[in-house]
Image (cartoon, rainbow, N blue to C red):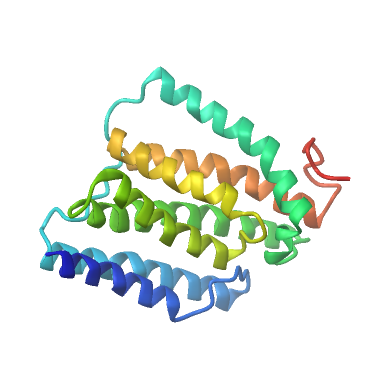
Length: 219
């Protein structure tokens, strides 16, 4: 069973390895990302449900009812992202790993791309990789293993320089939240709030007059 679980994960990783993961907002780039990321979720899911167990991969949208603490955490995510991400992206120059955007169409593509990848992150790394590892090892071992894969992907995507200092704890917390809430909807909400700030920072970094409300941009 372990070999079958690892094989399902490996199929997803091989699909990802078949193409460049650098951000690309061109027509071909958007289609390529959609096909590759879609295949990296679909094929491992089908394989795991056939070879491991019918319920090996699940996508529990609702999960348990959100608690007041969870609502406060969403507010904290926005505040932390607002303070930290501008300093990281602009200070490290990591924003340049994303294509420059200037027109309304390009900004719209960036918005769609950032959010689509954010949702996909949780589908693949949490619902597939983390879930399959958890069938064979303890919570935190599985969480560390999925975080390694998650952070490696984000590095290829563009979160370089000291980006792992942000992405490693983020990946670990996301895995832990999913394990304790059983709610894909909640971890996706957390991720999309984080990515909303990522979007604002990337647009502002390439177009300083836009979204000029970020107070931690380095001089």
